Length: 476
Image (cartoon, rainbow, N blue to C red; front, side, top):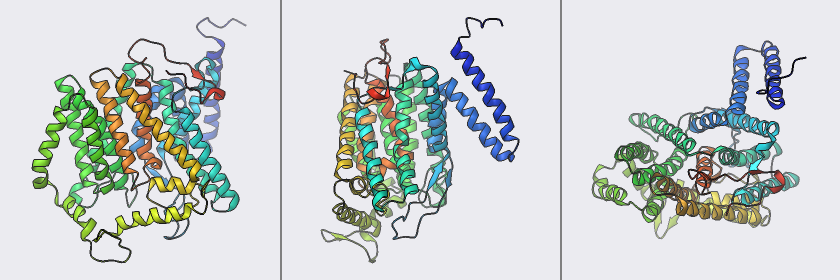
């Protein structure tokens, strides 16, 4: 038997043999199913092969699918007031995409062992402990009957899936050219989402992101736009070229209008500290100061009527049952429900203070911090706070290390966006909303790499480590 060519080593030969065998099995498999199922399976296999051969291409697909993929509802939400109220089990195409790409990544790591498993970063330890705290709390909840096993485990996976995005980015982002390509795809996705939302304005009502179902989630769109607007404004302020600044500024305006028309008060509230953080961290503040000054001067005159009515509705809603009074001001039922969530959550936490009731083990609450406390107890809440602290530390470090220009604008925008996301979590489940967290953790991976000191400087990136060394930190 003739020897294999030198260019074709054993690993490559095994890879080609595996792909050929998979193709044959796929052909036999799809012949027994309907064209729709066969097409879905074929696309899934194609994505697996693309991710295996060219992981960057798969990451671009993930970026686009984060906000532009349909939802498939597997189970309907339970009746209002029940334990499982508002906990319908749903998956999106991006969930399936992420699973396929993640599996392909693990397969690639197994075939090319020199690539290692997971790159060691300053966030690994906090991420690992947060995952463990969610799993332990939910396991105890299942054991004591407060959590339905299938629902609880499914939601735990949903809580943790965006960490896969983070590790994919830090493992594969090695060049500044890659970073610029990723930023282009991120900006394109934001533009498409904003245009889709703008097209809804003439119909009236609150605007939402694409494929949000019948009811839609304006608060989700608002949280996403707060984060992306911070990054766009940071790039617009610090980019050196006139045309690039105008381009980022145009995208900022495109994202700002849907943010207004989302009528999400939690998102509006988050925008204020986001802008303040940008003012404190940017070196070139002139553009942002000019925009804010203009907004203060003409904003009250040009503000849409829907926005004015939404603000008034907070304290001028007709008297209804369930409204809360604060300082003599009667709040609307939606805002009152947030106060009640905090009160009921604290009462529920007192029943299981150490490990909580488990994920989905308590009634639905639209308040991130109390939800973490009541679901995972003091242990999980402490780890969650530690994770947020590490995120802030890493963002500040990246801001300090970033070179002047667009890199510093990106780092400043991320830090401001993270502040906005944290404030948004007061009145929403921000850190478990996949459509906010997948972009957030993608950009977190970018910022960690940017702050490492080697991208764009010609130095060698740290090697990926084994699972046994997952929590060690080697970046000085």
